[in-house]
Length: 308
Image (cartoon, rainbow, N blue to C red; front, side, top):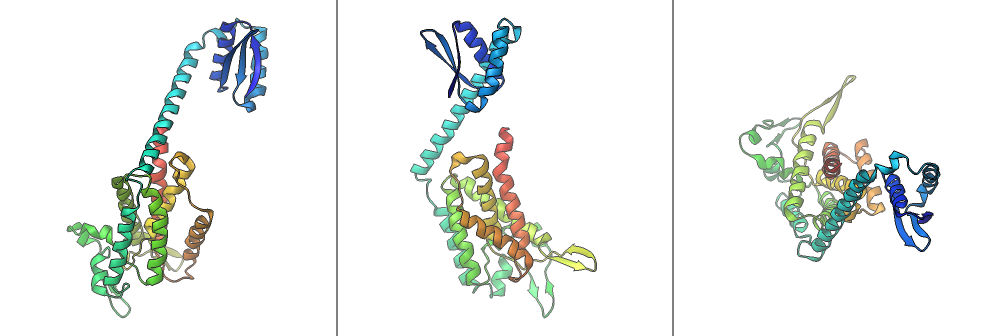
């Protein structure tokens, strides 16, 4: 904060301060023996403030300085409201972190369900269990796959929109997904109420599963790229990338929530995201990754967009 000038008249000092505020130059008035000192809070605004001071000194009776008090008062009220809202959010966050909500019990519950499903399905080898939890029941032939589309969901088996995320095909598939779920999901659960956290996971699961079903199997036919709908996929990675996108947006636009990802984890997630696209690591649910990531970013950004 730097002093701009000292004016002998309180009315002149207030008029100049009000005018500077309408130019987004925040100031502070201080009573001194020789008059009223005007301090500029942000030193980057000092050059512009000096220019306006010169203009004010030449013609302090200009109407633009005398008819600005109402607008300045409105700006101060808005700033006070924004500050109060910020401190309320901080207080809510502190209460949540210090209370029973600051736990990871639902994240742990999701991990337990994934592990149990993996054990029951023998790592995805029990076709009966896998078919029951897939987005559509399917049967594999020698070189074919048969399934009834999404008709079972339309007939009431709506759990199929979610349950593919609990399927994991192999120990490493399960292990890495659970590590990331505990890291990302646990961080979010500590800052959201259980209902909102579970709703977030539910939406990410549905979106990533549907995107994977419709767009996760690109096929090149001649020079034309087409997408083939297939039901044989599973895993929590779509939700994980959705949680990653959600934290990314919150860290950028709502840092007061305290959501943050270690740089090493960011690098690993992004590198794995693009490595999977190459096909070098085998068949991967890339559609679920893309759909989950975009959905998580959108959900994380919408509150900021709404406030604006």
